[in-house]
Structure formats: C-alpha cells, structure tokens
Length: 307
Image (cartoon, rainbow, N blue to C red; front, side, top):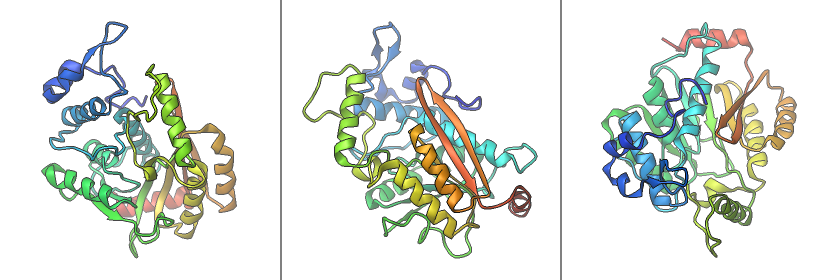
C-alpha cells in the first residue's frame, strides 16, 4: 500500500473500539487467534468503517442506508494518496494542499468516502456526483452533520445517467483531477454471481440470497457493459471537455480491460497516459490517468491555480 496510507498496517481493534464502542460486540478472535470481525456481516463492516472514519478522519457522524455500498477504506485511501503523487509531478514533486486543489468524484455514493479522505489528508475541495438521489441526500447529511466538512464538499445529482461530466461540470469550471470507482459488473446476474463467489471465499455457507458484505445498490455494482464500457464512455466524454480537468482518472479492477482502455485513449488522442499499480493484500488493481494537456501546460495550470 502507499507509504502515506495510514491503513497499511493491521487494524488496531482496541483503538477502533475506543473510537466507536458500538464496534465491540462484533470483534472476535479469528482462526489465527487474531482479533477481527466477520467481514461477511454488513453491520460489522459498516461499524468498522464508522470507527476508522472517527479515529483517522475525525468524522463523528457517519451512516449509510441499508444495502448501499460500504467501501473498504484502506483501498480508497490508496487511490487518494496515489493521485496526490500524480498532481505533485507538475509541482516540483510537492503534493499540493488546500482548497485551491479541486477534485471531481464521479459516483460519490452515499458513503462520501473519497471526499472525506481527500479533504482530511490534503485539504482539497471536492465535488461529488451521483445518479442516485438517495446517495446524494445521504452524502449531504454526512457533510452537514460534520462541521469540519463545511465548505469542503459539494454534491451534485446527475439527472442524465448516460452523462458523466456534462451537466455536472459547470460552465467555466475546472478540476485538477477527476476520480472514479466505476461499476464493475455488466448485469445484475453477474453481480449476484460475484456476491456468491465472495461469500464462498469468506467460507460462508451457500445461501439463496447471499449478502454482499460491502453492500451496493444496482447502479453502484453494475451497468451495461460493466467496468470496461463505463470507462470507455468516460474517455470519450472526457475528450469532449478536454480542458475541464488537468487529469482524468479511473480505477481499473480487471487487468484484462487495460487493452481496451489504452485503445480508447489513443483514439481520442490523450496527450499523457499513466498507469499506477495498487495492491491491498492479495487484491491487485490499478489507476489509469489521462490528460489532454502537455507537461508544460500542466505546469502553467498549477501556477495559475495552486497557492
């Protein structure tokens, strides 16, 4: 994991329980005689996230509706810290900090985790978009319930699901980077199969309707064409607003999708393309970032914007 990621070590459950006493009943010794939780239990996972957000990010009030995505925070933090390094490339190797750095989170979700981490770690300003009104409402509740987030995060509803940037980015508005964790599966059936497989990996008994331990509504888990098609759509639409973001980026979970991603980026004449490898335990993923600006143009960009 990234060296600045505070979650690169084992969970300290004593500290987490101290931050969030509600977590205590869910902590137990696993088969290795180490304290852990049942990661197949959505309530346990949600309380773990709540404890992490309290301990590391001073978020006192955080909750999401039942069945909404409850993301693993260490992996989300890795994305933020890696893109911080990406922004540093045009800033003499120094990670830019403060609200003059503006980030667009495509698919912010009800959990609002990326903006929380990015603001608390670097002081960046975030705009989060989502096609789900409940997700936007819940994220806004998190923001208003935690005074420390005031003025740091703005959530916008995307009313046209096929749009990604259009109608979200306002006229004359620019972002230093856009981030996205795209829906992975291509259908509800595929998502359900993935749930069963995850359940088997967690050594659960087979169920007729197995629980997805990290939750997730349909639009969070799948879209037509899955991850590959969603990212291709992102790339095409980014080329229509090439100067709205210095860097565009997306998480790519499936390595086999990279060929199609690179092909799409070549087609739209992206000036710079970078692939950032990430690993969390045995899970491998990567960020693909692209820009329509030259390195010199990026240097001029940051001189005008970052203070």
